[in-house]
Image (cartoon, protein in one colour):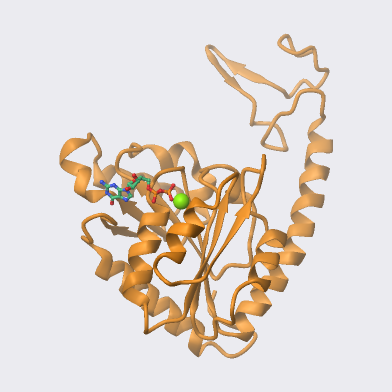
Length: 263
Ligand SMILES: Nc1nc2c(ncn2[C@@H]2O[C@H](COP(=O)(O)OP(=O)(O)O)[C@@H](O)[C@H]2O)c(=O)[nH]1
Ligand SMILES: [Mg+2]
């Protein structure tokens, strides 16, 4: 019997001294009143359904050779600022559009539209992440982006978006230097499933205790293959590296045989 909640599941929670684990059962998560097997069943059902929609989105991106990027981070790391600066640079050369995810407001989509790029806002209400079904509906409202880029700015959250494939070509995690270099260790799932980590707000490095080397080491302990770029969306430092990364991924997507676009 669990001494905290009275639950009969012996596996939950697990305590060592002053350290209480709620995530070391088979489901990796704990919900009061729900067994681990029920949690696994629910997650399997939800993610199974999401996978169907994600594959539909992916086929769509492959058919038009569109590079689809899922941008994930905590709130305020600079995703929209980086997108605004990126869209200004891409204007006239690469067709690009943005799907914005936030619980409320269309503030970010409005900021994007000011650059001239099309943007669709998804409001998730109490939802803490985008899912593939939502993205499929947003895509219907965007013009065709043949051989272009669709940026999907996920809801600011380092936890919930990690489990939801949107059908994207690549996932990019943004960590700003004001957040602390330990975040890859604290929120490993999101770093484990990202291809690129952007360290943003590099202009603030002289003012904060943030060790770039430690942040990179921590990210690579979770994901040895993760690429890293250091940028400042405010000053433009490092943006050329980000634009070169986009160009190389776009070329891979454009040159992949139809139906087998770059992963
Ligand atoms: N100093 C500095 N501030 C930035 C930078 N990028 C974004 N910001 C600021 O960080 C705040 C949150 O940015 P925003 O783009 O809305 O973050 P989002 O929530 O991830 O989309 C705003 O006040 C931005 O002006 C940067 O590179 N350097
Ligand atoms: Mg934003």
